Image (tube, rainbow, N blue to C red; front, side):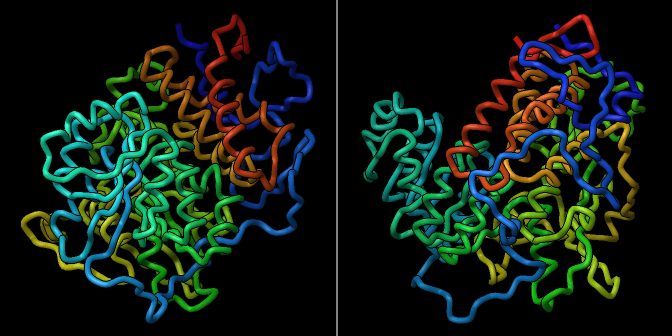
Length: 478
């Protein structure tokens, strides 16, 4: 049974609720209106609630790349192929990373692999790439993995559970770690890798969206580089190469617009799960495909761009680009605009993340080159805030900072899961995220510890799941 739908006016006016009168058992807000402003320009942030800080910090966390990227000379510390670990080797990022390794055995070698539960694929990966260490997060499947490797001529050391995933992340021979685990499950291994001095090929959004206030100071402490592996942030990273200090003026994140980019907003209340999973350009998993339809993926990328490059939220903009050829752009102080272009292929940003600051030659057979004449035209349009209220929610959460961004991400992940399971409607995704973020306002921690980040991630999922249909406009928590 779905929650009561938002009206068009309510979707347009969506904002963090004024929670001063709410209780733990019910929420009495016929409309979304509160003191937390959601405009992106010329806005001051205010809260009615108390802001809790575990550690008072006058300064925001330092960005991974403050608007420029300069390669260190003589920084190479290995001989032969670059040794890497992969956390999440059987997922989309992991398998594409291994495709790159297979095509470039003279450039990369795998020293450790960690997977969740797909032991059949993991066993095939072990036989082909011969890592020294392997981890299976699902401890009950270790026996099955050993059985699958019984006839193999090579057998790695196997460590089960989260302990094993952490050991893969901090393997002593690895120079770089590709983090492909989805959600906060990837946060602890990433922290372990940073503490061990490993550079991070970042494909786990929660590392910065939820963990930015903790992870970024840690990365600076250990002189670790966080290299973005998703297409948009890789594009920005490529564009800031060699910029002088202070040259970055604006970040322009491109978005395909997802499955409903051409659908009138009044039709959204009728859409089904199958409709949301029809992405026009990319072949991705269910969760990220729904995020593309709601544009929550782009809102989360705004937050990630802030943490990666230090741009203020007023200087990060979203533009709909249906062809997905320009993966993102930057504007410099003199108003020049630099863009990175390419076919929609996640292997390209993963490759650059692994090889930076080098550029590796790619075969035209497996890596088709971009032909602009064949492409014909590129188009752009401003995103519709009425169709995509996720943008305002993300900007508001980003300005709140601290644990709010992780709560936004976790609530969205749970809401999308509920939508895919057909427990809620499409428009209810926005409503559940809104209500969860509002509920968190009085407990927001500006400078959280790792334990607080994980705690509020779990809390947000539980709270989002507890929201049930009610007779009014809003759900009530049970």
